[in-house]
Length: 287
Image 1 (cartoon, rainbow, N blue to C red):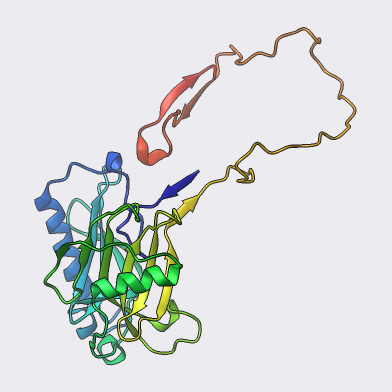
Image 2 (image 1 turned 180 degrees about the horizontal axis):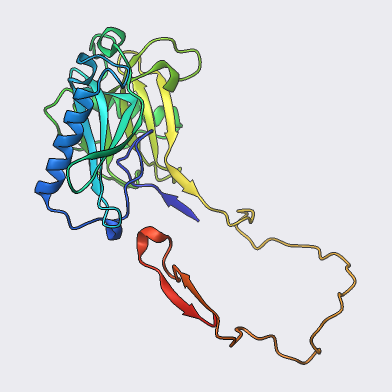
């Protein structure tokens, strides 16, 4: 089975959000309050995080997810320089119902402004999509711009066409050397192009150098699940081994019981629940 991961991602290093069914019906005001707490915490704890005040002066909140089960709101932040996000500088801050920070996880980068290059664009958003298609070895789709943000990241959305499975998204980001292709030693300004060519059937983030058009990084956002069987398009064939039959405790004609009525019970997450995030436990009797 092939599933296209719809994201937004995002993007590398962003934590997965809890399913909607597991989220609290917290008010927008409560979530906004948690975001304010998280931002104040990061600003006040800059030194303990190993960064300067300037490094946390331009934070971007990429998501804020309240959890019904824990009562926590998880606030995801990323560093930015001049309003352009820096890939690989993410921090998650967990805020409880009382407005207290109970946990944080992630890593921030020190002296970002001195490390990132000046913003000099030779490629615009449409050209970044064409270059991304070329790096994937597919024809460039027809581009019809739906929206373009006014911010420094110039986030641009292009319409879905017959050549792609979803809308195409392109925005400016800085890429740290450790997140770029092998051999890179400097920060790169790049367009992050989210594209799913129909001919390939996969969803990608292609990072295209905003000055040269070179591919800086590629993330395949598609999850494959083959259930342990080869994906050949036809049923696999197996050659059974010649194994002597084991002695049976049941007669050849005795039916094999599908359940045992022994009064046993178990506190479980019963099917069709996929995980504890999707519902509550229930008692299964004589399963």
